[in-house]
Every structure is written in C-alpha cells, then in structure tokens.
Image (cartoon, rainbow, N blue to C red; front, side, top):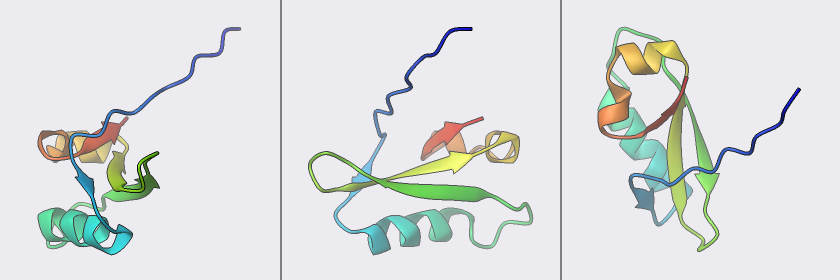
Length: 69
C-alpha cells in the first residue's frame, strides 16, 4: 500500500470564509443537484472552496472551483 499527499492549488481564494461560502452558493445555490463543498483556509489567511464528488463534476463545478472526485 502506498500513501500520497494531495496538495490543492486553489483556482481562486477569498478574503473571508463568508465570501467563499457566498461565491459557492451563488454559483450553484439554485441548482437541482445536491452539491457538497468545503472551505479550506490557506497558509496566507485566505479561503478556498473545494467541491466534492462526482455530482460536482457532472454539474461542471470544475470550471469555477476546485473539485475532488
């Protein structure tokens, strides 16, 4: 078994966690699919959004945000 670290280079970061949540909600809040996301703080004190799962890929979240499938 091997272990590998995943490092995320954010497409875009936000000054506050609230701004990151608002951006994700604005982009997909009225969407029919159930999309999950997390907000991760960066080393420089900003916040990045990562959408999770296949449904995020199918609904093209990867064009605006990072996605882990």
